[in-house]
Image 1 (tube, helix red, strand yellow):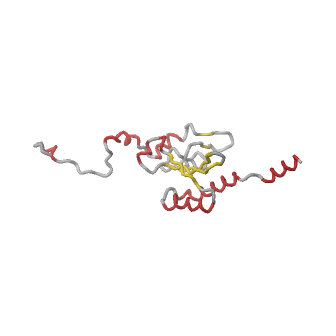
Image 2: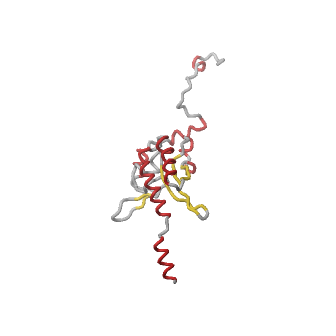
Length: 171
């Protein structure tokens, strides 16, 4: 500001979208999700093809496991998935979603965040409403998430009739 050169005397006004110099390399990595889907839809490491079936996907953040742009965890900025994770003797239900911090979206290791989900169906439904519906994080998938939670809970139940048959066969 003390210089006599007219070009140096005025600075451009600060803007909100300006990327700081230490994060300038991240701006080059920002890619629209439609373009990213066009790149990965034909070939990627997570595709599972088989005859007489739809193409499935094993990517993290894919809710239904189908290979489509709507459910893709790679091509969506807001990925959403549900998995189970062993924890000691029990198995936990985990909701995986994209990180909300913008700086994490460009780092693959911390891009996906896991949140524990309750086993109680009513409490889990409240949790989903709060996380997805009220925060507007992919509210269109809310019913699918609830259905998947119900299917996972059904898979945890043991077949009691098979256990009775085994016990009767041993006697």
